[in-house]
Structure formats: structure tokens, C-alpha cells
Length: 373
Image 1 (cartoon, rainbow, N blue to C red):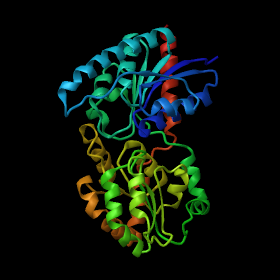
Image 2: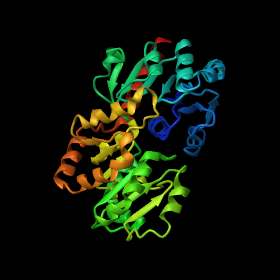
Image 3: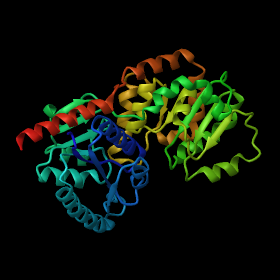
Image 4: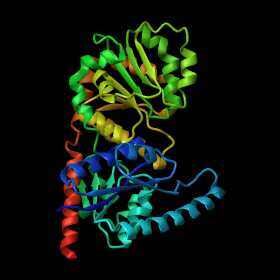
């Protein structure tokens, strides 16, 4: 009957939530009778996004360690042990056929509890540099799906499968809607266009760099689609009052149609989260990557270097974005041959059908585990 019970943990950021939902959607398409539940972290983005996608979710009180204020970690440890107890109860009561971890704070307790109960576990490691939690979990994991080559330096080689990161299916189809995209943003399809995305909350240095060089970019005839992020939108809006952008600027705190945004863009300026890089590879979009300095183990820089080393993007350090962003954009936009080369090279890193390939591995594990019972 394939009425499997599957539990998924993924959240913290859009880069973790969207792949988790993509995997769940693909599971539901292949196994309509499957019962899928999510486990997330309380007060994080997944607690809103997952129910909106149609899946139930249970929140754990877990949070990240505070490296700046070590004394605050007493409460962090208390929440960790409470989350472990809750995860064990969830596994015991739901009795899943498999547990899947796609990153985020809740993946640790959930996969640990599942493995302790003899439930097969699958890790989907999105980054080119594995974090401490996934390295610990990998020792008991049944399978590890990765997005980059060379991950044997972090995980047991026999458990690794190269699948890539799942991306939203609407994005590829959006490339066919370039004319509609320019209509949506009220921009000119004949003008060179740059998309800047700093995440749903925003990125201060990226926004500073854009404000600093906006007049110069507009004077150069470059069009801009600018996602400011929720934290910075009102301040940026005030600073743009009365500024003559000549109809070359569209900006908002959030872009509801990322398929259109990518379709319109000749160049993308972005953080170097694993999910975003996977989208850029799949869509063959040349990029300026500005790694966030506020992530564990500087993994965004390592993600960016995996693309830069293949001549698919430019890496601009965060500390330089405030002063060099506009000049870097102008230099690239003036060199159409280099942009084309970047697009070709970043496209060579794309992993197609990632969600389907991950679900293939999930199905194999469930069937193998069932045969042992």
C-alpha cells in the first residue's frame, strides 16, 4: 500500500525549509498514502512555512549556542535536553519508517532519537562544508545525500550519494517567462538587469553597498531588482524618497515571484547559502557571491569557493561589499563575454532532479528496513 510514515526535520532558514518541503512534496507525489510530519524549532520560520505548505509540524524548544555570551548556554543546554526528550516521544508515538534531516536546529535531536530507536535516518547535507551536528549524526545515519563532491572528508564514503539540493520547481519554468517578468517589475526588457537578494530578513552590508553605489549604477543604465529584507526596508524607503531612479529600480522587502526575478536577471548578487547556489547553478545565472560572516564555521565562504574555483562566480567579502559592490557590478555587466562564461561554468555544477533522487534513496532505505523486520 506504501502508506509509509515519514518524519522530516528542516528549518531555520529558507535554504533549509524549501528543500525539506520539496522532498516532502515529491514523497507525496510518489506515495499519496504516505503520512508525513515535520519537526522544527519553536519560533523559527518553519513553524509558519511548513503548515502553509500543507504539512503538520511539531516545534522543539531548541536553539543555537551563543558563542559570544557563553554563560547564556546554560539555558541552551536545558532546551537541548528537553528537545531530546520530546524527540524521543515523537518517534515512539509516531513510529516512522524513516527520519529525514535537512538541516536546522531540530534535525539533531530528531535524527539522534530516531537512530537510537533503530529507525533508518537520512541526512541531506546542503553545504560544501559539513557542520559539527551532521558530522556527529553521520556516524549513525543510514544514508547521506550531498550536493558537492569531495564530502568523504566529512562523512563515511560508503554512505554518501551525490544528489544535489532540491530547488523550487517553479524557478526553471520561470525562465520561459522573461517578458512577463519585466512586466511584473515594470522594467525595460532591453536594459541590463541585476537582481540582489540578501535573504528574507536582509543583509546590512549588501544594502549599504547598494545605497552607496545606486546613483552610479543608475547613471550607467543598469536596472535593479532589489530585495531589501524585512529589517531594512523602511529605512531604505526613507532614503530613496525623492531620488531619481529613472524607472530603473524595483525594490521591496520581499520578492513574491522569485521565478520572475531570476528570469529577468542577467547577474545575481546574493549571499552564498547552499540553496541559493543550487538555484543559480540550475538556472545558469552568473553571480557575485557575498558570504555571510554570521554563519557557523564560515560555510558560506566554502560554498562560494566551490563555485568560484570553477569560474562560475565572483566572491566579494562581506567587509568589502559596502564600498566595492557597485564597482564590481559595473565591471561584470560591462563584460558580456565574461558573464556568458560564468553562466556556462556555474551551469556545469547543476544537479538535476535532486528531490526525485533523494526520494529514490528514501524508498530504498524504507524497503530495506522493512525486509529486516
